[in-house]
Amino acid sequence: MNVPTGLFYTKEHEWVNIEGKKVTMGIDDYAQSSLGDITFIELPKVGDVCEQFKQFATVESVKAASDVYAPLSGKIIKVNEEVQNSPEIVNQSPYENGWFVVIELSDEKEKDNLMDSTAYQKYLEENKE
Amino acid sequence: MELKQTILVEEHKTLGAKLAPFGGWFMPIQYSGIIAEHKWTRNSCSVFDICHMGEFIVRGELQASCLDKLVTSDLAGMSCGSCRYGFMLDQAGGIIDDVIVYKIKEDEWMLVVNAATIDRDFTHIKNHISSQVNIENVSDTLGKLDLQGPDSCEVLKKIIGDDIAKLKYYKFGYFPMMGEQILISRTGYTGERGYELYISNEKIVDLWKLLLEDDRVKPAGLGARDTLRLEMCYPLYGQDIDKQSSPFEAGLDKFVDLSKEFIGKEEVLKKKEDSIGKKLSCFMTQARRAPRHNYKIYNKDKEIGVVTSGSFSPSLSCGIGMGYIELGYNKAGTEIVLKEGNIEIEAKVVEKPFYKEGTARR
Image 1: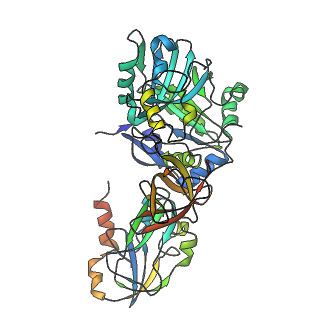
Image 2: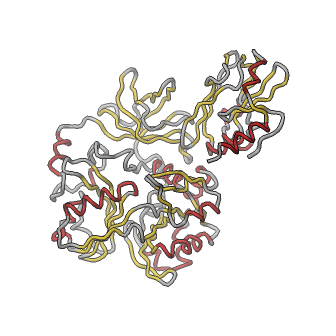
Image 3: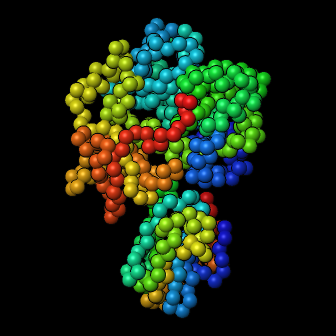
């Protein structure tokens, strides 16, 4: 499983890249691999607000629909339209071209509720079936 | 309940399959990906491990054995070497399984049943079949591989010779393969030209490997099997049809022969006359979002039905589904909305099947 360093992760398999107030979020390699072929993605609109660990997007694979939870709270300032038109990009490139949204972070302290790559790697190993 | 494994489980793991529980079995859901496997089956040829399904052998004549009463379709009209689809009903007229009946000889038949219902079906048959008749559950010793796709005939020709090309749709024969005469039928669950191969469990691994030696053949899992059958509007037992539904509301009248006697006939006819008021219908979404099992179906503000099967269609790149819809709202072209929580999907009722290019009968 690809778990890049420098990013932060949730137990529900979302990732964030924090650059000051600007935060990019998506679902990680583990999530895309367990979902299989992604066929549809519903994202919020620019200007919407997301709240940490609350649903902010929906992802559908051939087999099922799943909720995606926001790793951090903030205001949506950019939405990846490309993944809405071609959802398979998330399977091919979950951390690069397959990002979901960019938000303006509202509370930096929320970062303490996330795992860094080392902690997340350990979490994945502990929770292997 | 402990999950059963097919004899091929190590092969699946080697091929990188994702395995998951299905009908009490630990089965391969996908290898390279559902969409890729689906498209490969439509364009070339795939092999599916279907060892989980059940097979019973009935040794006795049709009427004397009472087998005729156990299945709704016209079995008396079958010739040796042919297969027929039908239903087994309980006394209340509910569908307890859908089956394919193989007529091997005048006094020898094979019934192929769903994995999750093997024990229940076998008990039901034992309870109703003549005590003089020998019935054997060979599910644990007989394996089954499905080879499906437009190239399947050419692939088998290379292994067993030209005779396979003469086999017509829903017919079967015995062909030499790996030192054995094995039963091959021209049947399947994908809508493509294809074959189901029955062979003893000891030879399944070798047969699997032999078929995969051909570059035109790739393995496909139950995920692709489900999207392929849904594009053809083939019902899945336990999901689209069950004890609560009748063949009539499922639109499968042609597999019920009302000129003969069968278990549950009176009750199922009553259901038909009581005008159940709904019909299994097919619908397509306007976008990529897919209907899912149990989503509610609306026409404007009126609830008119429920989704039984739904998925993204790899061939059509939109959502497709089947569900029971109130009569009057199930005509092709009717606009409907599928709802679940805050999800709302616009869809349209269409004629079946969704996928019209299938090569099954070619």
